[in-house]
Length: 221
Image (cartoon, rainbow, N blue to C red; front, top):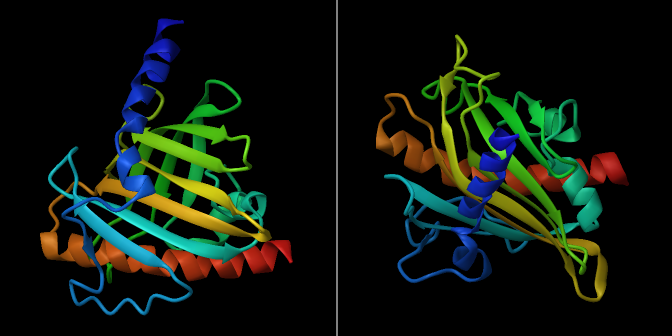
């Protein structure tokens, strides 16, 4: 019906951060420049710049993981009862609110309290598109959406993911490695000091890569 078409049309929004995926743009800041001791390992890099979508930052992370793109994807994909719920401290659960096609759905993600409980539990409702490319790259692209089956719930502050996603790219000549690029620009909503938000995101992103690497080794080797 017209509702799902409207959803698909809004996927045009998912292309917005594309220039930031391939190369850092002018004016971005790295963790090192800001004096954040993130103990980044294995060539993981994190940078950010002001978002064009809301008064916050667009964050970009990248790193090389041991594991094929399929194995890495299996650990990060947003599915109910999937591996992501088992290893990612920042995710309590995923649920599929509506399946539109094989590769397009509306999902709800709930997250636990964080930053020593300064950040209370959040939930996010997103339109998620999964794409598989001829070179073996797998990507997920998402943006926040309102859905009649998923009104705000007691106990959760409703946050908003502006266009975000991840790319699991094969590494030429290294069949068992994956170049993972992640980017997000999340509005946590609620009454949070900006300093809490600004320190939370880079740290959680820095932890994401080594935790994901451990998960890939645990579940696939």
